[in-house]
Image (cartoon, rainbow, N blue to C red; front, side, top):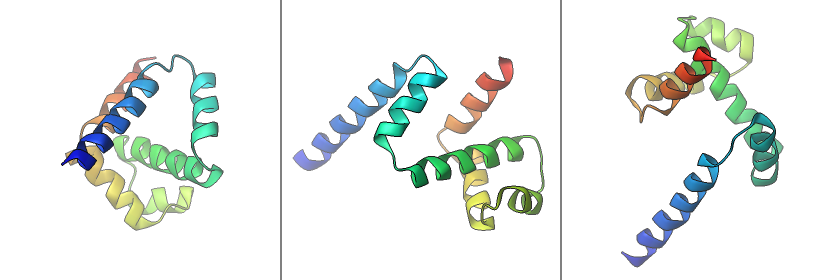
Length: 97
């Protein structure tokens, strides 16, 4: 149980750090330090797919336009519709701006 509590604390520290990001430049710098270029590309692909799904774009069109696999598009759609609400919340926030 101690291992899980330790892991949860580390994750909470990360979530708290992310919550302090105020600008796109800060996000870019933080993710640039934290992630590999391939991880950032994967995040960007999933984010684009989430936006396209939210707009009602057919899955095959998303795959054709982004190069993201149909499995990834399906996974993103599942989390967009039945996940923790993160995609939907940020899609709504970014569309409000």
